[in-house]
Image (cartoon, rainbow, N blue to C red; front, side):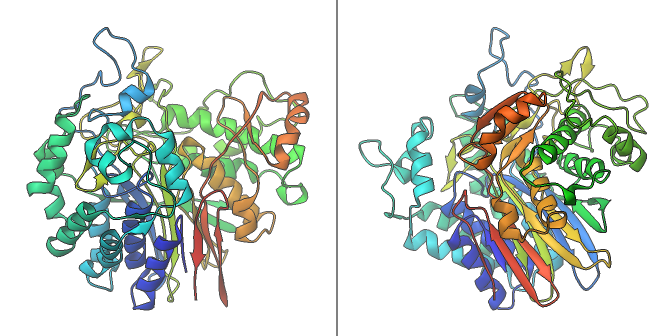
Length: 534
């Protein structure tokens, strides 16, 4: 089964597995098609995280293809000449926000370990579709219409817009020959074709010649490496839930589960005030820790074991007082192993433009992969048919807070903190149970946590779990999803002490449940995705 945010991408992954490809093969092919059909969200100009479950070896591995800051990055990246902090979009658009792309190097690393089909075969679906064209979806059309900065880039304007500046209509064929040419070259020559030579030179030129120029060099591209890390896992009820370690902050999701394990959620109504109150309070506490402790572990010392320590999470859970929420934001805790760690609060603004892919192959190998270019259409800089990320704006805008350095401050070669939270969960006997993840910026953590609880605590099937109305508290107030039954809970939650807002909570969850005799897929109805299996 392949679950992805666009039917054409899911079909590509399903076809690759039908030809004997592995879950990793299918994930790569799916992601390359997403680059074409969902260019606002992900692509080879960005990065991602991948969890790979090797069923035969009974081993879960985590791969980090997160972008890195250039060696020559300006530490005052987010400030203007007068020393004032730039408006967020001014920091995003141009070359200054572009991190060194990591997606293809991650694919190369993982394919070397788990690929069954030849590397070049995985590029065929995206290449064919780019040359023949694909129908513009309603979602892509709407985003093109809303964006006022993408059309400032000549290459993007020629590809996506008509002569009068309006986006090409829904259903019209979009042909992307430059992307087809780029992918064909990488398929034939490997990732060196991207990280050196003409393609790399064009990336550097686009970044350095932008109106808001950046610092990426040929050396930055040539020396980029994807890395393998140890997955972060926690025991939850009778299950084991695993996700990506830092620089992902999805450890906050595991913290929530560790706190919520102290409560009998199964007896509560998923959309009832008591459940919302308890989960929101756990969310506040986890986000408070996230904003102080999480950064690139290759650059800052992090108390990871302490943040997941059972005793610490029991103590944090004791701060949850149903119906008695404090009007003040939650404070970060004092986890074990914190000695000597004095950090300031992070001020990164993380907006959603991301995509998730869940794959399970016939041998029950699995991939949970989240990929991104950060903001919608990234930096709005297009090179050879693909958009470049604006990942550097995921660093904290401030290097210090209250006199203390921020763990997620920008530094040369560093990977910015992320909220991408691919999840693989297991039954008590170690067998595969759930593969899931979502886009959604800093809300990803809450979306995925709510889905995991829906399946494991409330016995929803995966489609019900990904479709349930969202709520989340990122330590700044309870957010309830508009146009859902939860929106009617606003006054009730205010009476319990919550500061409440109602608005769009645009997840894009893609999940697969694994049973002994079947796979069950779920695709978020808020997006255009599907799950395709056989």
